[in-house]
Image (cartoon, rainbow, N blue to C red; front, side, top):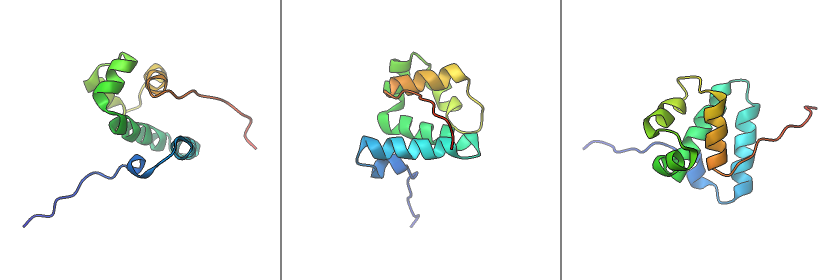
Length: 95
């Protein structure tokens, strides 16, 4: 009998928007930019790729490819996805 596993998505275990925001901020602070891109991709899956695609105006297939973590998505793609997920980028001086 084969063991059936599912892909781990940390957003499945977060209960508040603050937890989601903190997680994304930590991923963005990582030295590897793909950490944030992969996290964003998992958040898109949590919200539904089709729904985010429609809200962002991006093609669903392109969205999958962009947020897989194996490519470097364009800034406008990330911006549109963040906006579709109701997130804003903000800046602050690093300590």
